[in-house]
Amino acid sequence: MRKVIVITGASGGIGAALARELGKAGHQLVLAARRQQELEEVARESGEGAIAVPTDVTRREEVERLRDRALEAHGRIDVWINNAGRGISKRVMELTDADFDEMMTVNVKSALYGMQAVVPHFQQRGSGHLINVSSFLGRVPLVPIRSAYNAAKAALNALTANLRVDLKAEHPGIQVSLVMPGVVTTEFARNALGSSSASGSAYRPPASAAAPQTAEEVAAAIARLIEHPQAEIFTNPAQIPIARRYYEDIAAFEAQV
Image (cartoon, rainbow, N blue to C red):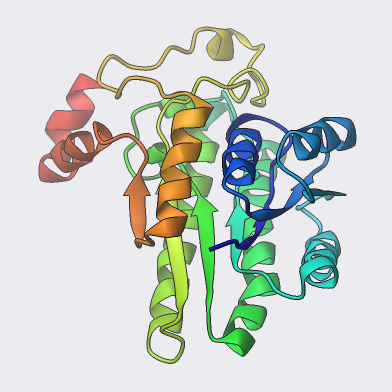
């Protein structure tokens, strides 16, 4: 079934790969990001009728404008994917107020704005699918140098779960999903705050992490999630035993990080 799908953070990385994947399947896409030129290029590559809507998702009014643009174009929204985010390469004791505020704004508040913009539409229709793209690092602290990014994604995990529980009883037709990629081979790490610092340049994925995935592999996992909704997914099956080991014995796990 052809769906109307909104994707934020669609100008590169996972968002762009997802747009191309879903465009090939014939879905109607409304794509959002701050980088207009790159966003328009992705829209051209994502099937007939894909719409590029330059959007700063850290501004509530722009997220609401994105929702309104999608409704004007298609009359409905079936799936809303909060994918926009940014990383950081600073340890906890290096963080400034500005660092922490940036991570919470880009990774959590932007998704909150998306949730609060689209869920009333879903409630009115009695159906819809909200997908928040988080990170495995929000569940398992494999990479301490990501510090505030990990904390922000943990907050996003909690918001997503609480929204799902809130809606379940009165709005069973609304699906709320959390997606947790691990290491992904995109420009994300290069664009992280502090990535040019000594600590950032020294970053390497730990040996205990699952093997990196491509953006296309993550996009394929999200496409499957749209067809078969679940509460949460790890995009890489190898992440599941890692998470299980962490929660079975946190002290032993952290001794190996």
